[in-house]
Length: 151
Image (cartoon, rainbow, N blue to C red; front, side):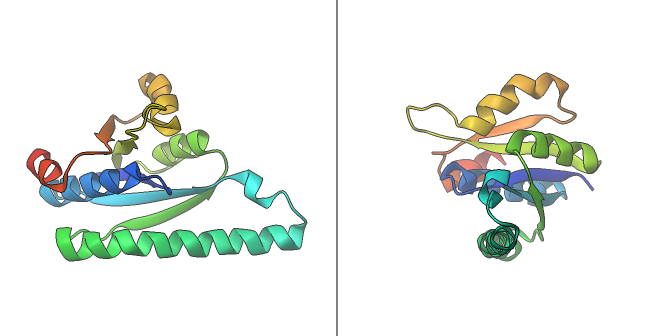
């Protein structure tokens, strides 16, 4: 089964990327894999404190994921899977694409503020020629109606 890989983070544009991935998966018989990345700088503390912070980060990610997963299951009939990796975002995204041969498309949300589309879109666009799958960039300000029309 072809899967749409989408990155879960706290950005506003993440919402439209999630919606797009779920709608495309529902319309094409694919799946959705949600990737959350815990940056290493969150754990530069004593070992015990770092482990507690790592566990708290995982709990926050799982709670955040469950909100999207419920919507995907209830509204789109898609049961997403969650993958949590630790490290720098770009190398971890690339590694996940390489590690999971079922990933067919990487879906990213583009920011709408003056700062540009966001760091993931900017950095992954530069390396897209060597990435093993196409990237779909979803504008962060598309309406749900427009998303439904294009998926």
